[in-house]
Image (tube, rainbow, N blue to C red; front, side):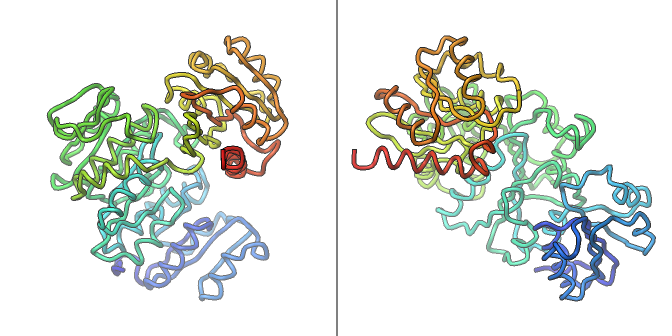
Length: 453
């Protein structure tokens, strides 16, 4: 771990705990900063704060004192989820006190280079896929960031032989100053998190912090099929590596209906790739380009693309049984997510959908319901989804009580060549504690009903 002179003997406020705040506070203390932690959770219910206090770190819990910054802090490191409308954050910015997220700290302490992945959609899949490609090519990657592993904790233990493949949200990138990845990936840009960023411009600007400090020696891999992304990418001084799904190009990476191409030469036939859908093709092109540019081999990339089943609960391939392919997309907790899942398959879908009733619109799914041959519904929204399916002309619709029955009925309604897809378009809390538990119930039912048959 590198030393960071700009924090040594400096008063630093860590605002908000959770995993990132806990890790940042511990590392800053180790670096010789005078650390104070402020968290809204009461001390008696806050084991993270209790542990930090035992290390000799000052802890203020249960409230955010408005005069806290009067104590002479020279730096604030905030939890990414804390909005910039927070009174302490606003006061810090008014006083020109730097406000970081722990990603900035991770970059400053890391002996390993970074590959940064951002975008509105596809970050987790791209990050995970790239990690597997590099790992199978013995490139010693580490995985970190918004994917669930705190970046500064990973960077603390990284060596120059590693590379840190990091998923980065707009929340994290907004709090960076010097962060500079050797390779930056921008998968796509849609309007999102505007309640946090206040404006589309601020959201885009935060995302583009991923390339802000790059030099001509660095690489920016970006989606050339989105004009907004292209316009932003052209402002970067990094070497530009566009990817496109609109046909073969002689440079960089591209795809058509038949193949993925690298520098104009076929790399892999698309029919051999397990990850389905146009949205996943974006992720595949971005990850493949990064892996090749980091020294990966075509053979390894081909092996990964023909075996990688996806991130769990996100259009995750489960099994091919008697010509039927089963996919777990339990993380689709709204109609927009299910629309994307339906878009990924050309037709012959047996869809399992339903869950918590929030009275949200499901009309976004309608243009793709002609791909659904049968619909199995469950949960509080079962009746509404059944009526919706009928209005879309779905041939067979049926309501069930539980997941095993849903899978059993889906199999009965399917035939060889069909896709059986769990993509609920609803939250899980009417029947399950989380979408993960719901997805696991689907996987267990599939395995039970297909094993030995």
